Image 1 (spheres, one colour):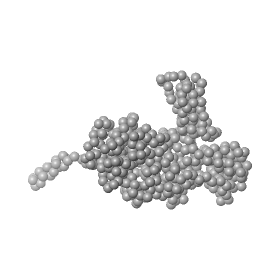
Image 2 (cartoon, rainbow, N blue to C red):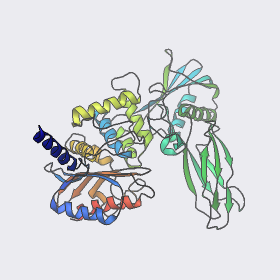
Image 3 (tube, rainbow, N blue to C red):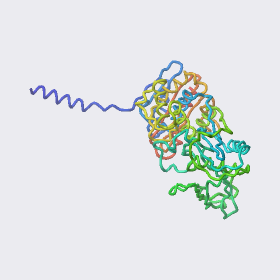
Image 4 (cartoon, rainbow, N blue to C red):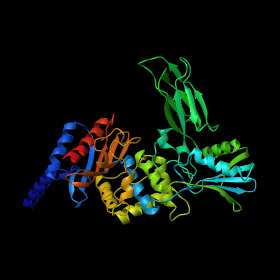
Length: 466
């Protein structure tokens, strides 16, 4: 038996010398692998990287680094959301906002329009005023979708920032107030105007206009968090002679916000409104006015260029309505996963999708899965519509305005950022390699994102110039 024990001891020692399986994998063409690795090494960044670059001519992997590892995608999640929206709803899908009348009552019914403006609501008020001059109750109907305002895993301290606006079937002006800020007289508060102008909010203006001062405290706008009210406190300073600036802050209860604005617009046209109530449509009501949005494709361009989270989540809930009576995250995300699994070929048990926008940190995906999706879209009937929604390098008024300006139309990309997260995925139209799908996911850093964005941009620019 002694030889057996000697063998067993040798085997155990041998096993202990075998290194554990590591996540670090690095494959690709020599012509890309060496220079890209050099770019990464020379960047001196300490960060988790997941990269995959795939030729769309032949499907071959040109480069990959930790491509199967899971990362927080941030707004790269919107790639999946847009693809699913085109699949389920179609590029010509429209959103409707309706006014119905039931005797002396009016019903304002939301249809999940992510782009409803005050001007469009004003047009509905004009047409309503032609049918009625006294409204006993203005009913607000947002029942097309559920009443859950915030996505699963959204951070509690996102507060009043525009990108965390509450989600509702009855939404207006991105569910935000625009604060237009100008200097006042020296030692007096800043001049603050709001759009839309409404009694729905109240303001405490504690700001100050000052002379030139290197230690100036910038204007800051906070909504009452403790009482969850639409009361905004403005603090900080603005320099005398400074240019006008606009800051957006979200509001609580978007349906009531929209209804209050509509009531104020009706008042403008001499229609008296006795009270407002939130309810669903009545059986006796008849339509008297209707607003139809522009196409889904128009909203999708705002979704991708400005990375609008409200649009993403309204798309998700509308997707849920394709086979359910009410739109909500559960039904919408379930349908998105079915699309990704059955049509695209992504094993959705290996990723996690918690919302449509990517604001949730519960989301997890890999560079490999994103490239699988991008490759599928590129070969699908949705190719042109999808690509047309993605920003180009240096595209103005969006997330790419200050990035890869030289690349221009040679790239179509979607960025994604949270604290400690900066990602970019999309297409490169390379003179040498042809059309390429790529994903560069960067997670796990502290501080400024610029060094990591610079690394991404250098990799993309190298592929274009090679």
